[in-house]
Length: 428
Image (tube, rainbow, N blue to C red; front, top):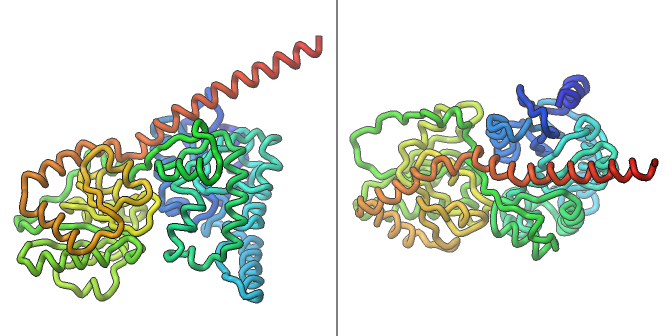
């Protein structure tokens, strides 16, 4: 680790955070996200919070990104602009440069040498050919920890977010690289059973090379441990909560319609929105729109905004896992979510209600209204959610990953010993 730290400090990765007390008995384990606005916000913050928890548990040693707005890369920016311009001139969709081989070739060509002797746990679904040219000589042990495959992402998000701006050929090319990368890495950690199945069925990966590790809440353990929510006012409004930046994909419209139904029936239900809230929903009776609250910049305000929510809701039409659900559970708040992505694994331990992705506002109103009217049923659900608080942490996820990573360390050590013995025998 000392060698890696010295090199990183001298030449510099775009952003890197390293443990102050790395392990001296194994190779450094570093969480990677290929591109970022900032390291704290990349991959919805998951890379950052996983690494922080893993360092505290002493099973991970840091995290880094290979592109960041904190340290601009003019050549990469120019390459991206030219790539997009060329596609527009050819009448093709301009999105997807970060899935292009030229993007990954640039970042690995520039930074791979700084990672010599480490284990890299990549949260992005691609390494690319340039990485493999140097992986063996640099003795980098590669892993993946993904929220879903690109096949899932391109299919499920086709009508949402940035995927709509990526053409089919770019998608096919990216999946071809991804398939080769999965075959070559040491192990793939998937966040859901659905993604594990897709790795097997679409990518041909053997099941023994896959482990399912549900993610944790993107809130630092230090902020949660000992957290005491502000006292709640005496009013008995039932607060349903929504956290997210993509209101349409995450079903805020259906949730707002359900709340409107319940209020029309005289039930004291309030909808609190943290994140994106369209104007027509913001203007509805019973809606509290608090705007976007960045957890990395204002954790105390974020926790205060959700800690008194009675039911956390995520009614996504498409989702890989849904970090908001973990954040609610981390505070002991029961959840209502659609059966998409990794939600079944989150729900498996209790503390939530799962509904079908096509659930209607009327059906949602019936479920929420039932909890409002039947206090005992609600309290039982909340008790189950509170028992899941520790499970919903990144510390738990890091420990689960450590079991597999340590097994790989042992197997690699045995292989090194065998090779050393073979070399010694051949020289006699």
